[in-house]
Amino acid sequence: MTNIIMAPLEGVTDRTFRSCYYDHFSGLSASVTPFLPIPDRVKRVSPATLRMTALPGETRVPEIPQLLVSESSAFITAARALEAAGFTELNWNLGCPSRGVVRKGKGAGLLPDTEGILNILDKAFSCLDIKISMKIRLGMDNREESFRLLPELKGFPLAGLTLHPRLGKQMYSGSVDLEGFDKALELYGKPICYNGDIRTVRDYADLKKKFPGQECWMIGRGLMADPLLPRKILEYDETGRAEDGEGHPLGNNNFRIFIEDLLERMKRQFSRETALLNYLKGIIVYTFNTTPMPADYRHRLVRLKNLEEWELFKNEIYGYLDSQ
Image (cartoon, rainbow, N blue to C red):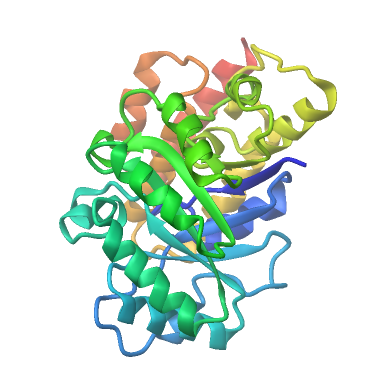
């Protein structure tokens, strides 16, 4: 059975976005939220922080809160707060490649420290009941970092492991290392959820041929570019057909309705029009990386100054796509 999980994208897939997505699209098995803002040496997690993730049963799609911490005390304090609030699983982020995060020894920046990671897991599993899953990269500077870690992780009762087969220093550039992912499967000896560069059904079909036993897939940027992608993937599993040339995602009326609904919901979240417009630009620009569009549209999108300009620009894009 194919399981598709929404990847966490900081500043994009917040609770408002996720709720709107669930109301318009299907195909997801779960969502991992962007990491909760838990500081080092945290003593108490605020109710507002806990509300950034929906409790079990509150949404049609189960949500898993994510931690970005590098010390056992912060991990355990946050995990206990999540347990007390009613959450049944958390995800530990060891994959974020952001330079600011890496400089603090968090995210992918913690991957070189195998013993440190194992120490945190030892302490966490010794005193917590909440399920723990992890999201990692192949390494920060080289893939030997994950190759050392993966055999050690076999001894822990992890609820799941997701691997993005790039190095942290790559950020999101260069190709994914499919040979490295294959080696990771061998070293871990248990199922691993695949994450990275699934932008179209064709991408998924090619990966499925290479890893025929793979059942779990995490999608981030590809889902932003085409929110209908999870449903298309499930349809491909049923029919075996991966259609090319489906057109630009913004040519789909369901996507257009979603954008309008998301914009209205975000108006209640952003007090400044500039911030709202920048958020909207961030969503739309993902779609430009799927099906070709005239280059001028990307440049003009970046230069939009207010929502009135957005309305004119949007109508021009829709008109262009409808005429193709």
